[in-house]
Length: 196
Image (cartoon, rainbow, N blue to C red; front, side, top):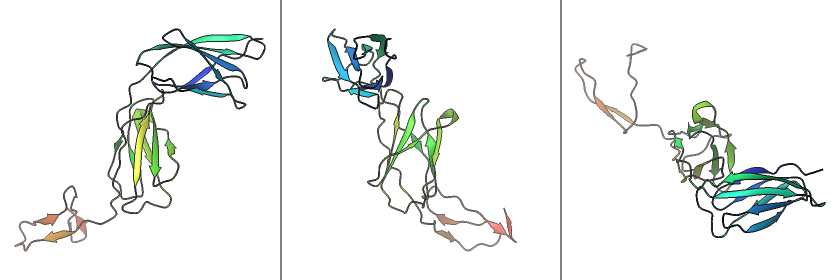
C-alpha cells in the first residue's frame, strides 16, 4: 500500500517543507534535475533548505517513499519567492493592535523578546489582537505578514502612544473657538453638556 501524498506547508525560495507519513522519505526533484532525499520525522514533518535559493516560479516535484519502497506522488510545486506587502497597522494606545493584510496571509506579532503571536485575519484581510495586559508606551513591537508560501514581509514597528494629547484654548468673544493640540488629534467641544 503506497504512503499518503506529501503535503506542502512552505514553498518559498529558501524553504521547502510539509507533511508525510512518519518515518518515510521525501524525494525532491529540483529544477536542475537533481534528486534530494529528505527524511520525515516521527511527527510526520519534513523540511529542506535549498542552497542556493530557488528562483521564483521554479518547479519542484515532491514524492514520498515508505520503508517498503512504495511511492506516492509526485506533487508539482511552484516556488513563490515574492514576499507579501507589509501589513497596515492602525495607531494604538496599547489596548488593541489592528490593521489589514493581503489575502491568504497571516500576521505574526512579536512583543519584546517573546515568541511571535500568530493572528489569522478575517474577511478582507482585517486582523486584530487584544494584548492582556495592555501594552505600555515604548513597548517594542514587530509585526510581519507571512504568505501561504512562507515568505515574510518587511517588518512594521508600530509605536504605542498612551499619553493623552494636550489642548490649549485661546481667548474667545463667543463667536469662534480656536486653540492648539497635537497633530493628528481631534477635538471634542461640549457646550452645556452637549457635544457640538
